Image (tube, rainbow, N blue to C red; front, side):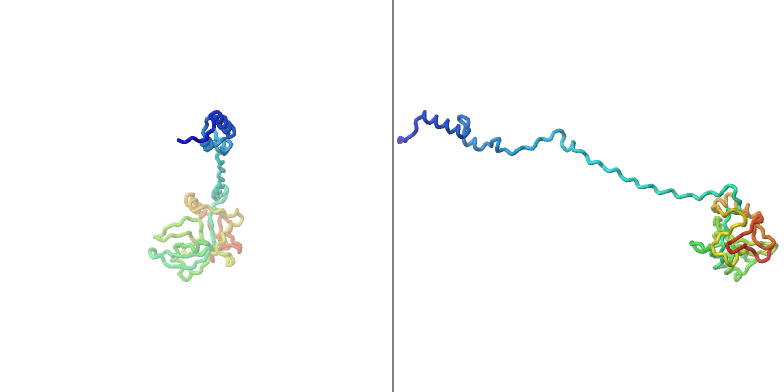
Length: 245
């Protein structure tokens, strides 16, 4: 090979040491390896490690208590009548008018009627044993009193929702009639007695309230309907029959 100009070995060691010092290299460290390794100053800051169980330590969102809806108030039961209330004051008579009448198909003494008592449910269907006493023409349009708080009864296959009130004497039978000015649906009161507090149909049936009250139902010398001397009254006056006293 051909000789070249090269530095002396002692001078080369000195030069290498000087370069290492200027490049912050350890003695004998490869400059390329040092350049590829990141220094601590070049490293991005690392976030602190979470201690414990991570998500488990996060506070759980507090659940809002469910708002309780107010309970519906229980349906009020009808107040029982006072213990000393006369039996007649537990019977409800309403002013009505016959709007339709026809003979019962299975009984020759019965009329079937539709009676308007001013109720939202419409006319009541009632069956009455009045064919021997009233013609169809006499029945139709007649104003009368209806016992309106009785349980419905089947009469020869016809469901009757009440009874009509009549006076009788021998072979004579007459309706107890309200005065002309009494409105349909008005509940009859009894002169000198507490206001009517009608029992339910079941109570009337079970306690035989109507049967007990009927014992004292009579007309007076003015042909007015009475119970134990107390006259049947409406806002327009007393209720009466034609001439049974």
